[in-house]
Length: 498
Image 1: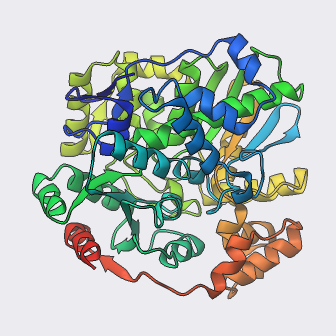
Image 2 (image 1 turned 120 degrees about the vertical axis):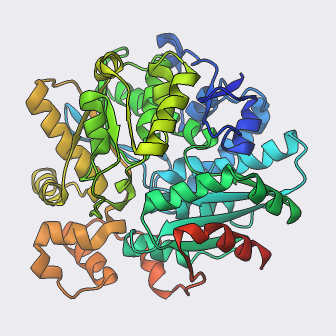
């Protein structure tokens, strides 16, 4: 299968798209077609392992990888011994019409592990296939979770290095600790005095800067991406939509072919886009419900087709969604305008120059047939954490609670009681202070540090604290670098020369 740039200037194989990360024209790589999964094929997958689902879904996209290469990579990435739950993405049932797929049972307790445990294997193979002798230098902007997952995935992988930029004051305490305590000889972590959009904008600028690429080449390094702008990040996320569906069928919660709604807490739009790809492949999805926090630029976009980032930026209790420029939306725009790359280029130019673009009434109307969008502020989020715990004894992190609140809103406004799956993206223990405050009141945790809040949460909920959190208390700080948004090039070159 070939891959095209959303802006029209590239055609690549799967391994090239994964190795390069971003197209030379600044566009994102998209597959030339969506492989189809029939109901017969879907039925055959029901009851099989997560690894089997991954092999069957990914082989159709990654055609220049042999089946043996893919299977070996998948088995290594999803070794049950390295996951808190051997099923990788377990599905919990809260009531007959509501389920939660938990994507936080990997080493960094966030959904990014699903893709970033596999991506290093795909990148290493891609370098071999394309005779790339330089070190593949991964550059990542993170709003909180991608950074640690990328660092762990690429840590000490031969022929690679991984540099993560994060908003210095814009992630949770545990997210920051997870990153700055990372070991390995090839990992680098740099705080940015700004928000995620500043970090993401800076990384994209580096990828488009030929002078920077030449400096990297002189160091024997080739820059590449592990953000969800890389198709190798996006593709593995398609898999858990299929595993969730077939597991519900296997348990008798759904009939094969019955439609389902997925509710996705959304920041950079990669996770929900993977659901859209699954739907285009034939998975019976009725609606994809896009859940945002107070940074609700996507909610407004799906309401009227206008994307406007000229608004106040909020730091919230769901920091991985504190994003105004959702990069993966470009891939959806490419599909909704019938793959008109010139139109996409114009929209992205408008966004870069004025912070606004309008997709038009017709496109907005078509998108509303698939997507529904809502948002929850911090107060609503805290209330939802408390409501779900009291009603179902189920503990949610703030991102998942945003999705849960938006689902209630959707059902009230539409009357649609279709079976729904909430995509749970992080362990509640990654945000222990906010979750504990939601359940006990802010006064009850006032003055307590992160670890005291985590212990209080364990005592209250009876949900065991993950060892990854417990061990953080004693890990040494290894990374202290901080830079201004306009100093990212100098910072990364300095780190890579060490």
